[in-house]
Structures are given as structure tokens and as C-alpha cells.
Length: 297
Length: 230
Image (cartoon, rainbow over all chains, first blue to last red; front, side):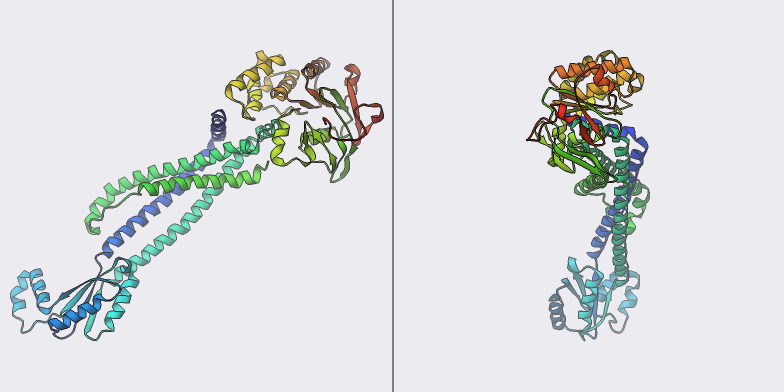
């Protein structure tokens, strides 16, 4: 207890002795984690949104001529056999017309007056979760187009591709920026610890002369780095949560229906714990960089 | 010390073939002019420097080959009084002493008790809350000594402790070392002032340009034969 108390007192003294460098370090850690957290929240929600929309990805294969029930069933079974496919719904020409009539009740008479049903029969195909991506859709579409009975294939490919590209960009940007931010944070922490080592060099010399062990001398610096990392990460999470709430109320709520009422989510408890742990690890690395270099005992 | 030499770049004979044996409880002067090698010899004893050749035994530790992680344990058996005192300027007299105890992991109660004891021992109990800058040169010296003895060292090494003191303060300091020596602590006091041994006679060894002189007359220079006190 006495020793732990001593370490905490020393760490606290380090923090007090150099208030500005320490405040700047804490600010930098907080800002870095805030930016990373923003990316993480954005990434997770975009991913969630895409997955939800992906569930609605439908590929529609239109059939030529007037296929009979038997032909339709055979085709359905064939398509169902493709690895990408979760579910196939057959829509005959008659069903297609009925649906159109329901959608356009005011044109019902006009539609009934047509000499023959112009609408094609179709297969409505839903994809398995793992194929709900641009590549998955393309692969299925290729297979469908090989079939001569299928005249046309329609799918919402444009937005899907754009979205996939956006996700990749977001991921790349997040990772790149994240690495850069983490590295600079480590440098800032390391620099602050170096200043603290410098400020305490007389004490360190005396500690060495009276027989303090290396661990004993280094421990307060490690503690300080860990505390800064943890505190920075926790502060960033608190700020991020406040920003998230603000965004929900001011920006997202009015737009929610446009985005299919997707419930925007904050980080899970595990993800928050991971961020806090990240703060500790960063503090440790930053301290190690300085202690390893400037406090060789 | 057995046939100990220390060479630096540009000074190949900082210390040359020193053999020396100090028994437990002795008080000796290490006399020599500036640059004679006194500080180097002391540094070898507390493992701040490694010898280029020879063996050094201090309080049962073979210092020349001591693993770095074991150096703190050697130093806990020593008390060091530096030429420049190395007092912490922003800490009070009491805190300067307490710091030395805390640095070796002493419990709080023990820190308070021993730090106050040490202050009394050097007659600074009334100056406990003063910063070093508020103390006289003699008081600062006593504070440095109090810090050196607070962990009950077996061997006290003092480098020019009277260098900047008036005659009165120097006498006070020597008397204090004698008092510490009477407790059973071995004292090695390095000085360039040959007047000290004349005024307060003790055993002495003389260093000149890295070599021991007048050795034949001294009981401190045995034929090197094995581990001794120092």
C-alpha cells in the first residue's frame, strides 16, 4: 500500500509539475480518440445500414415469352441451386399484372383493356447474407444471364457499388488516419514523459544513489502514461457520446425516414472498453518510448 | 580493492593498480589534490563506474562484476555525501530526507519516524520545514549527511564534504562524521585539504595522479590477498 501510494503521489506530482505539457498531451489523446471514435461510429452505422439495406437487395430476372407453370418451377429450382441465392419467388405474367393494377388503381381499366398482357413473368431473387455485396450480385447476374430463357436481369447495382466503394474508402481512411493519429499520440505522450523525466532528473539521480530499483524509479512514469492514455480515451468517449446525442436529435431524427428508419447506434460496451484499453496501450507505448531512451538505469 | 585500475579516454591512468583494504568501523581520509582520482575511486566503490582492471569488494558485493539490477542493493548498504550535495531545491529539509526513505520503499510510518530521527541527529529538527536555500552552507551539508545516513548505511562515502565550509562548519561536519563512525558506520572521507587530517587525525591514504602514495606506512594497503571491506 505504501509503495502504491508513493507511485501515485509521484505520478500526480509529475502531472502537476508540468501542467501545460500534460494538459496538451491529454488534449491530444482525447482529440485523437475522438476522431477515431467518430470514424468508428460512422463506420459501424454505415455498415449496419448497408447490411439492413443489403437484406432488401433483390435481383429480378425477367423471362421471355409466356412460360408455363412447369417451366417456371423448373427455372426456380435451378436458380435456387445457385450458391448466392437464399429465396426465389416466381411471379407469373398474370401476377405481375395484378400487382401493377394494385399499384395503379386509377389505371386499372386501361390495363384491363390491353389486348394482351405485356408484362413478363419473373423470378424475384433474394441473396444470402454473405453475397449481399456488389461482387455477390454481379456473380449471380452472370449466372442468370447465361440462361437463354432469361431475357433481362435487373438489380440496383449502382447504389450498391457506390456504397461498397464508400465503405472501402471509409475503412481505408479510418485505418490510415487512425494509424497516423495513434503514432502522433504516442510521440506526444513520449515527449511529455521525456519532459517529466528531465524535470525530475535530480530526484532520479538521488533515488539511484540511495538504492532505488529501476522498476521503482520507472513505475511513476509508466503510471502517468497509463493514466493519461486512459483518461484521454474516456474523455473522448464522453465527448463522442455527447456529439452523438446532439447529432441524433438535431440531424438524424429528421432524416431517419429517408434512411429506412435505421436506428443509429453508439459504440457497444465492448467497443468502448476496447477504446479505453487502446488508451492504456497507447500510454504504455508512449512511456516506453521515452523511458527506454532517456531513463536507462 | 585489489589491483584496481581505471582508464578513461584521454586519461589512461585515472587510477592505477590500487590495492586497499578498509576494515569495518574505520574512519579514513582519502587525500589528494584535484584530479588525483578521489572521486573516481569513490565512484568505483558505489558502482557508478566500473574498473578497467581489478577486483572491488564492498560489503560483500563484488562491485566490479555486479549485475546492473543488483547495484541498488549495494547502494542500500552505502551512504553517499556528494561534493555538490544534490539536495532537492523545491523540497523542505524533512522532505529531502523522507525522499531517500521513500525511494527504497519504506512504509509511511517508518519514513516519518526515521526522517525525524535523522533531522535530530544532525540538529536540524527546528529547520525541518525550511527549503535548502533557506539553510546555511553548514546546515545544507548536515542535511546531506542526514540523508546519507537515514537508511543506516554500513559504509559512508563523502566527497569533499568540507570543501565550501568555514572552519567552524567544517569542524561541526567532521564531529558529525565521528559521531556516525562511533555508531559503527565505516567512513571514507575524500578531501583535497591536507589540513583536515592534521587537525582531526585519522588513518589516511594519499592519492597522487591516480596512484596511492605513502602506502608502505599504512595498514590500509595490504598485500592484495582477497575480499575485504573495500
